[in-house]
Length: 337
Image (cartoon, rainbow, N blue to C red; front, side):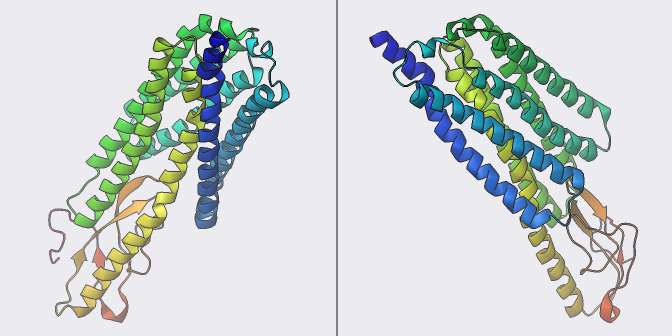
C-alpha cells in the first residue's frame, strides 16, 4: 500500500497539482486574448488575429484533454488501482497539441527575427531548423507513446523525452538571444527610443526565461526521476507559457504606444514654445503588428505619428507654421538644417 501511495504522489499527484496551475495559466491567457482583440481588432492584420485565435483554441483543447484525464482517474475510476496501470491516451494526445502550439508561437517570434534582422537568413534559418527539429522529435515521442499500453513502459522512451526538452530549451534560448541581440543593435542613442527598446528587451528576456526554465526543469527531471510523471507535468505546462508569452508581447504594444504619444506631444509643445523656427531631426520608434521594433525616419506631424502606424516617406508641415520634421540624423538629433 505504501508503494501505491508513493506512486500516486509522484505520478498522478504531480499531474493533479499542475492541472490546477495550468488551469490558472489558461485563464490568464484567455484574458490576454480578450484584451488583445479589444485593443487591436481594427489595426492588426487578419493573419495575426487568426494566429492568436488558433493558438488559443488549441490551448483550450489541450487543457480540456488534461482535465478529462484527471477526471477519469480521480472521479470516473476513483479507487480503481488497476486503471492507473494503463497509459492515458488523452495525456499522450496532449503532447501532440503541445508540439503544435510551440511551433506556432516560435514561428511568430521567428517572423519577428526575420523583420528585425532585415531578412538575415543566418538568424532566421538557424531558429527555424531548431524549431522544426523540436516539432519532429515531439511527433516521434507522440508516435512511440501512443502505442504504449501500460504506464510503466513510458520509461522505455524517456530518452526521446530528454531529447525533446533539451532541443526545446536550446530553441527558446537561441530565439530569445537573437531577439535581444537584434533589439540592442537597433539602439540609436536617442533617449526615448532606447528606453522603449530596453523595455522590449526586458519583456523578451522574461518570456524566454519562463519557457526555458520550464523546459530545463523537465529535462533535469527526465534524468533524475524517469519513472515518475514530474517531467511530463512540466512539459504539459508549456503550451500555457507559450500562449501567455506571445500575448504579453502583443499586448505590451498598447502601453508602448501611449508612452510614444506622450513623448511626441512633449516634442510638439516644446516646438510651440520655442523662439527659433528651424527644422528638427527627430527619430521615432515603430512597433509593428507582430511586435517588432524598427527605427523610422518620421516625416510627419505629431498628430500623425503613432506606434505601429507611422507614415513612411511622407513629409508634412506642422500646423500653425511649425517647422517641418526632416529625416533622422542620429549624430545630431537637434541640429539645424
